[in-house]
Length: 47
Length: 466
Image (cartoon, rainbow over all chains, first blue to last red; front, top):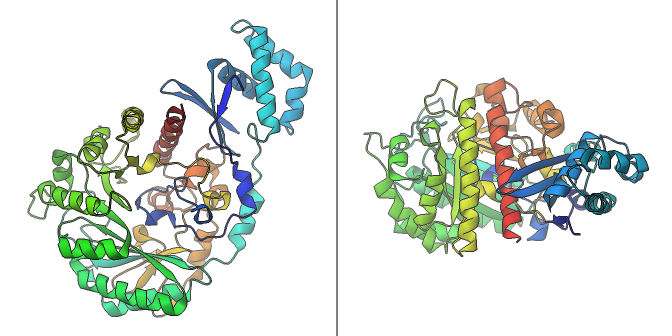
């Protein structure tokens, strides 16, 4: 495409099939403790 | 739903519901904006709408004064292609799905162990009030800690990875119990086919070689509390006698971070109204050699001198922009660091169920006090209306867990039209409770900052993809 560069190859709806296994971290375990930051976490299935 | 913005010269279009991020030229940016104002996003079938002759004609009429017709048609073709591919003007199809996910039986998979309600620092903004959490000074006994780990194992179902954070107050003030509980956990994980991932959060005052060696052997993650530049840190993080803590702590943290190969830790600070130029603190950490950095906004009452006020937001936004640009430059020079709040994984991040269903507090994540009481998370400790049970009797107020289970971005009116809802998961429930008396609301200043951080994080991806 001449006008558009798309940065990702996956779309969120694709994660509906296998998603929700619950094996990932709870969000406050990593560092935050005062906010809620989920988008930066890693999916355990993709590790 | 789309979100468009320009940051650091990049024209970015986020297709919120698919999570697709598009870096576009100015022409395409204007075309997408024009189509949005023409109602394409609200149309039942955006692809069909885009293919109608009157849509293309309407667009040409709007933009032909600024751009050549051939260029507009070219961009229009790209936009139709992306929309057909499900990467632009996509619909929110998740509400029912999240309802189903939320109905699934949850297990407890993480505990925040308040191993010490006592502290050897007297940080001015501490939500734990020098470790006391509206209560008395106390250290968790080994017996209570064991029961907490037993409770976690018993309530974790088939979940194998169990996370335990040694938190406080200052956990190193009860170090022997931490070590004994880790040993107990290692013994029990074999029996029950579990894998404990231990984390410790410390201010570093009591950190020594023995602690470092144990932590490196046993702890999956370490959170090192420090605020940044010496004058900033020492103003907010003094000892009880008023003396600053920076000089004692920094060399110990540098040594620990190196001994962990600069991985699996965060040096974590808090910024307040007193250092709204916090980008300097992040870069100070980077200059000290730290690679894993988190500096987060303080959450305080409006009356607190240090709390972030609405009028501070423009300055904070400028700082995040400046920081994002500086971090891109460092990355390009081969001196990159991770800044926790700008970390975003556009392809391998969490599934949509995780993104929309909240942080897990009150259901999957619980806090345990030194005397064994259970609360929805560390921030609710001491709030008696949120006391859910204890390690002897388990959850005795399941209605509290149910209320937390019912919380998602769809239970929060303010989240419905927010572009950042897939990145913050509806925000911190404790902050919502603090400012609105309900977990189903949002902490508005926090939301504004989160949106800015998401924009910066995506811009950084665009800049580094060049």
